[in-house]
Length: 445
Ligand code: NDP
Ligand code: 2IT
Image 1 (cartoon, rainbow, N blue to C red):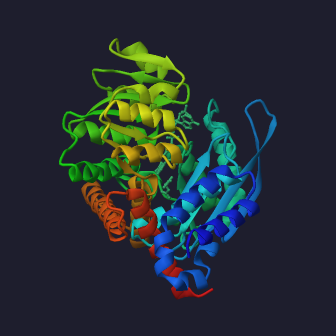
Image 2: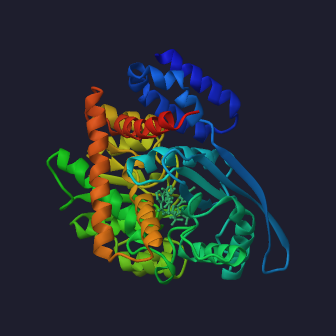
Image 3: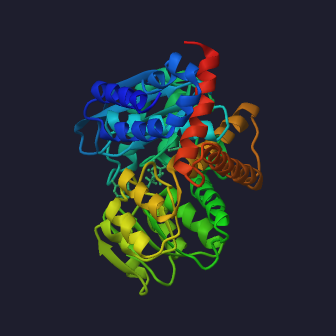
């Protein structure tokens, strides 16, 4: 095996997928982590498991035409990458953001395979989305786009085939429009999407799940160091679904969350973020985080979100987007004696930043483990839909908590058994990979 195995696979992936830097970044991290596994498992090499894993089972790209409020025809590009179905139906969110392209969706879909495996629920990996920008659009425009998107997507998905959900730019409103169109076209009422409204098949605690799960996972990282949330200063980036519910749970556990952001800038409120204001601005009014400062004299708004990691904190939770936390940011966190970083967003830390955390002995929880609570609870929503019943909030939350505890244990143990104690990146990649690889081996070529 060997580094030559990793090098060969990586150069082939790089040649076959030019101009997809995020996808290559995600593949490189996994392949480098699993080298010690490959060395011990010759059948994985012989059956070309890694080479098969890096090639999506199916990639869909389609035209999404819609009409804006001015009456003009608009054209966006839609994507669904059905990456791996070894463990169950393809499962993963839909992202609506102007930065979406095939490489972004492939990186997210690739990460999703291992994340979903770590949850130990029966779901494969997929991801989709569009370069549509929901910002500033009316409800009618959002509906028109979602209906057009689903008019193509419906033929490729199904409750036992592929079950999309939310991601950046896709929340309850968008899932509602997508679900309505799927139902209309197929004349079926099924659990084909998760993150649905509570009165039409959604699960209690799904909205909270990614953020709460992130905090449950981080709790284990802190426990390993003999500490907890009480009295800790926390910086969170983003102010969307993941950020809001990470803040809620961290505050409930006694932390002082002092900062959060959106793509325009960040708020620093040393007295602690007032979450009700954030929820109103972001969830109800769909406004900008800048508006928070106008309501709270203790808060300061800074234009541009790059400097948020310069705010001294004990715990950092990046919950916005990929590669938002770079080496220079990691060095600031280290210099300010930050003790733990856990990723709510997908791949928010660059590889150079992760190296700084590891070298400094900062506890680091990688996305595919730390933010798996959202998709895990989506799997619980699928289970409830199949049974045609719904569990109480406490039951879902308790299952989520157990799943996050179990993910932490899997990552910690896998790292330890390969002589990499405390390296949760290696642990998550190894534990997730082994689950998928064994299922692929069992199912033949
Ligand atoms: P939302 O759309 O609810 O919120 C996204 C937040 O991140 C907003 O505050 C947004 O600011 C900010 N943001 C997005 N893109 C950028 C950017 N390019 N630069 C700076 N800030 C940005 O999405 P979610 O909270 O659902 O998703 C956040 C992250 O968590 C993503 O990486 C997603 O993949 C990941 N994730 C989400 C899960 C879920 O269940 N929703 C599950 C697991 C991971 P603005 O409003 O200005 O765009
Ligand atoms: O990145 C993710 O795990 C998600 N956006 C959630 C996916 C899901 O199917 O709930």
